[in-house]
Length: 368
Image (cartoon, rainbow, N blue to C red; front, side, top):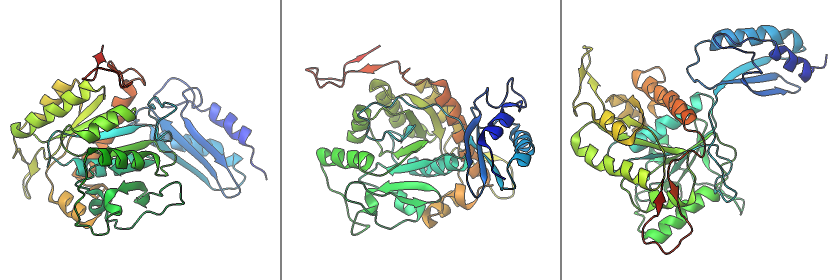
């Protein structure tokens, strides 16, 4: 018996959403409905990634559609619904709904660890995710994902490598010797970064995560001028010596018009074996201080966990290696909070406007 897609749509229209006022279609919670010769596939979405009635709504959809599926297997899955950035005609990555910059003014606070596990957490929430290692001088993504292959090209586009469902690009994939140093001046850095954005076949992505180098130099400036990002996630550790540099990164984001979506406090605390006490080895409150300065939420606090180091060194990040661990769950909560933060920042609502015309001003002319 042929499956009628219209009959499936009509059936979905009649399902009331638990906990919300309205039907499944009225609330625009059906992201995809595909029918082919092998199965019927429904992808549901929710603005709140922690929507508590997912299991109940999944059951209602299965019960309503099963009699109409003509005996084909019925697959119901979920993805989080998230707003999209404004994409200009000359955008280097027009297929990326959101570009998230993971940045910090301080080295050694775990930006690559956060970028890696945040990418995997977003992927686990049902999103199409890419990760660009924008730290040209110190690429870490090849090690953290356990990838040492070389991308291929069709002559026009470079195919990113993939692992654990995440598309990956890094200068580390292109070096003949992994221990070789990249000794480039600013213009070469600028050119390589733009190539990684527009000459890589990223395809359609819900999120492209950029792991930025420390500091407030060429890479962040290039991105602010050439890419309309959704915003930045600022990474810090709790101690005061880290905060002084991280504050500068927040200040730069404000000056060049990059919205700060939130702050992640890495290495926040340690819970030793055999006790449940939190030991705040590097102090406390640092993430909250940065969040207050950034006028942005504290997205999460990631504990000090030896498993994170082991997983990163082994090329299987902790969200993939131990998804039910407390640390992996902390990264997933960061991803969920990031959704909420993005949805609260309407596309195009950035309070600052930057003149990128290359006029006669010596400094970036920022107007409110």
